[in-house]
Image 1 (cartoon, each protein chain N blue to C red):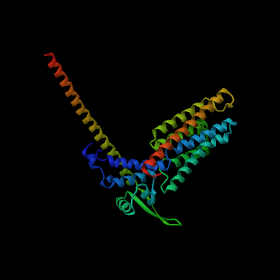
Image 2: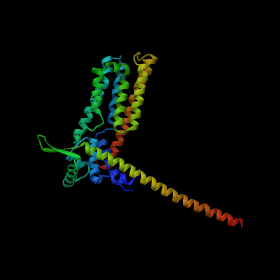
Image 3: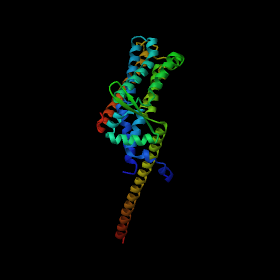
Image 4: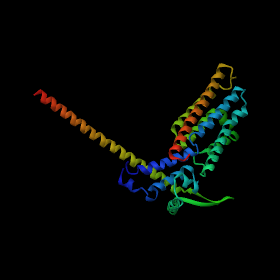
Amino acid sequence: MVAGERELRSALQARQQVRAQRHADSLPPAVIGLGIAALAVAYATGPSLAVVALTPVVVFAVLALANLLLAKRRGMGAGSDGYLVLLLAGVLLVTLLPGVLVALGSLTVLGLGLLLLSVRGSNWEHAVAGAIVAGAGLWTHWTNLLPFPPDTPAGLLGLAILVACAISLVMLAARSFVAERRSLGATGAA
Amino acid sequence: MSHHEISSLDDIVHQRTRLALLSVLVEADGAETTYLKKSLNLTDGNLGRHLGVLQEAGMIVVTKTSSSARARSWVAVTDHGRESYYHEIRVLTQLVGAAQSSARRGRGSSASRVHGGIRRETSDAHDDGDE
């Protein structure tokens, strides 16, 4: 082992443990994935503008609250991943900048949310997933796939994209959760 | 890795337990002393000593908070502490990376020396056979 490696390894392990205890890697894709699933249900049962517009801000609020509760339960701070910044941005979009939300679409905003959190947490795999979801959101929104009724081919494609994004993110979250449990088990900090 | 970079390592932060403490505090954005003790497997005395050193260096702030049941101490990292932590991690990453790549190069060159030796011996044997 080279000089300084022990110190570096122990510091990075301590950081990893804190992130695992807050579920900082699994929580964002899980909650955002479930939010997208809710969006899919909303579209499938007849798009309600209020549900679609409020989904991002509700998802960001749930994320911030869940992170706060998990951190508080352990006796640590809420971290600096940017959950509150995201919530604030969501509130701002709904209240003061609805035009931006209309231009981007809810799926894009949720994807951008995951991208932001992942970049802050240096999780590049999740950042790519967030970028893909945001890209899919822009594409479905700008090609007007989602306003179609879900029983038309275009509407079905839009719905299928939503479902695929939701399932992918939930699977990503499950994989991160297993990695977090493994990391906590290895350090005996579960 | 230059001498300047190595000498820029701060003894206060470089100590393994204190670096781990700062790592937890930076990532969590503050923590209770009970959490720090448990997560890093420290005794009260050990934690107190390391927190004292960091506090004296202006890297952390300890605040006593009393809930209804018991008094608690909350430890928060200062901007100076955060900067020192990131600097230490950056320098250590460079140091370890440089040492590992030089060790690989060392292994590579000794391996090529061995291979070279084998090649030389083989060609010598061929030369002997030719004669």
